Image (cartoon, rainbow, N blue to C red; front, side, top):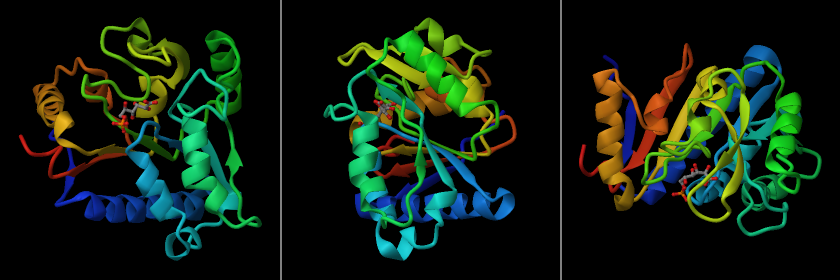
Length: 238
Ligand code: 6PG
């Protein structure tokens, strides 16, 4: 039986501060250990304020971003300038705010391609080396990345990247699989808001029972460390 490791914060500000500081620490550890950091950024809306905080000089200058390879945990199959693009959100909130001489290598999922083709191209770019850091969110249905409950790709354990489908537009997606996520050296869930509180209880119960069914509950890194960063609203029913 495993008990999820949780860091809980009284409000959104404290959550953002802690998540950004932890992110920079994990990236600095990877660069110190291996000379580079391969990180998969999370999508949706929760990461935006944390990326903006990370881009602030007091944190961002702790990282040699030229040694960082940015990947994405998932992407909606839309152009990079589309409002739903996870790439666009990360570029606006983080990459574009970094100094011109301190830019990371960004490996975008090509949302304009047909999903299977985009997944093949991204898998080739991602390669077989484990990611150092994977940042995840959780939907209130228990999905993570673009692995949705009941979808066949959520059960994929040989490929590291899959074409996926979500219940709401943009339906077509590309996502890391649980294999790629669970191979990572450090995995972080960033979950906030009261609307996630009930599902957090179910996910934690599934983890503790040893019978994880929801995709978010199946994130159990083989050897990497996993920490759930929650604000009090999301943790309210624990
Ligand atoms: C996506 C994300 C997805 C997200 C959750 C939570 O592309 O939508 O990768 O897994 O993390 O849906 O989204 P919010 O942070 O917007 O609640």
